[in-house]
Length: 172
View 1: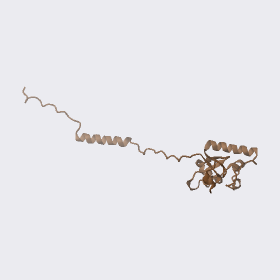
View 2: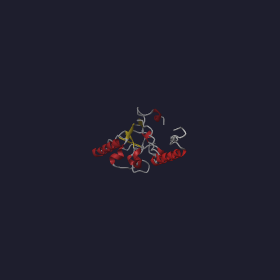
View 3: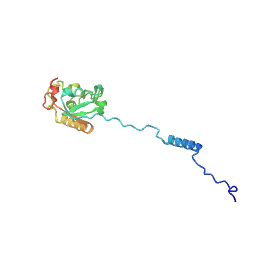
View 4: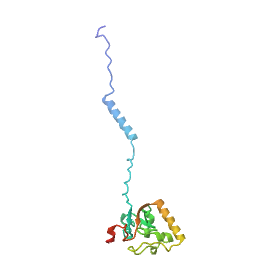
């Protein structure tokens, strides 16, 4: 047998033909489109600004009534609570809106939401609640406990001119 009579050598077939590459690319695209997430990745909401514990006087507390996108603060027995999560109740238009930015102690103790329960003279002394009875003081302690469980304490209420009050407040 001579070389001329020998059968032709077997050709090695390659899978990297143009049609195979196109079909493989199309297959990969279909798999990607089928299994990719249909919604964008969830983004976390931005964190609220940090709240620093500070000393407030009644005039300094007054602007925190929920108006103009400000937080809603109210004071109970000298503790100032950030009740912004309960804006529907304590913010503008809410049933307790007259307590926003004010010392709500007497009104909560007496179960009255009237404006007469608020101290009119913001420059004067704080309401010491000395004329309240045992039942009213117990109701006030209940409110204070409830606020303590639900809301963040952001400050302390002191009268104008108090040693702990911020000095710039006395100039106003």
